[in-house]
Amino acid sequence: MCQVFVSADPMLYASRSRSVRLHGVATSIRLENMFWQVLQEIAGRDGYSVAQLCTRLYDELVAEHGAVDNFSSFLRVCCTRYLALQLSGELPRDARIPIRSIILDGAPGSVATALAH
Image 1 (cartoon, rainbow, N blue to C red):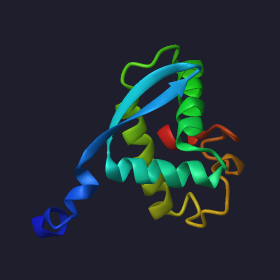
Image 2: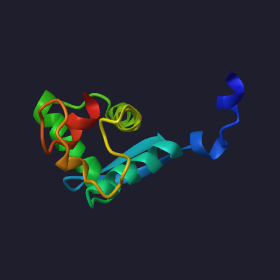
Image 3: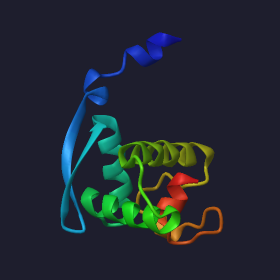
Image 4: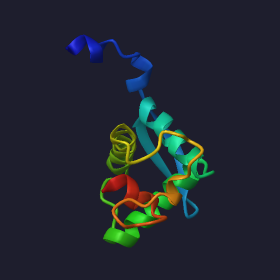
């Protein structure tokens, strides 16, 4: 069983930091390369850059919970949720369909809600 996982390309789990501006404030986010790839896919679905997606997710998270305790972990959960929603069929795999157009859990247009619940 473990061979399925240990045979992954080491570049996928190598981490790197990217500087993202959240409302004009430079913030460093450190994630594994695979998560950056998934964020790029998510962002592309709605015509965002990764930085724009991160800002939108941050804003929606603050609006929902009033604070952000661990944004990097939240982004990892969003990526994992995105992939799980695709596997379950709740989110179309067709990247031409914007996420904001899909209603999940009764919350249309909320990227953070769709990916985090």
